[in-house]
Length: 222
Ligand SMILES: O=C(CO)[C@@H](O)[C@H](O)COP(=O)(O)O
Image (cartoon, rainbow, N blue to C red; front, top):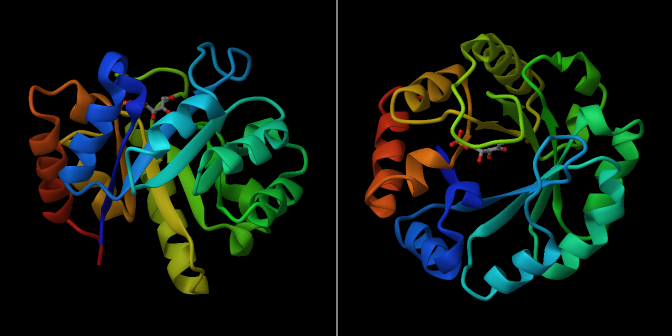
């Protein structure tokens, strides 16, 4: 079953509460919240205060994507703000296993993200501990970028490995997901599709969520 995770990076911030309710009404299971520090990625976005303020507007799972150096510094604050899940980047952490444990100790599920250029090798021995792997299909930092199709084999390899090992770990993809790329990543084995522009930059975000789900469902992985 494919899950759709609208990314609020492309939402209209002047009416964020309404935008969040809109995608929840459309059936989106997950709300993707991009946290950027201006160091790991060349952009700045949200912190725990924003998460806390929209928590009251939604029952969706809050999926925090930490694009920050030293992610361990922010785990407790996002947990207190109402986050359900935190993903941090392998590229930002020398002690990834410890960070995963810290996230779980705060009662949240844990994910790790890999940039398009980062191979799967670095997560081989921590895969069993992860609830999710986020495979970036653009270079992180901005919405509205072009999907990098070279990541597709990486999705396929990870999907096969997870199936083989019977690990309870979902694959999320993020960047350039739209009605054309959604069926491709779904067929490759992705479970959660993050979409910013393909939802919030559309005239009817509610309809956009439904169309993405339909598109993804048209070519599910076996
Ligand atoms: O993490 C990021 C960007 O770094 C994403 O979550 C973007 O928000 C995706 O935007 P689209 O490519 O779907 O417009």
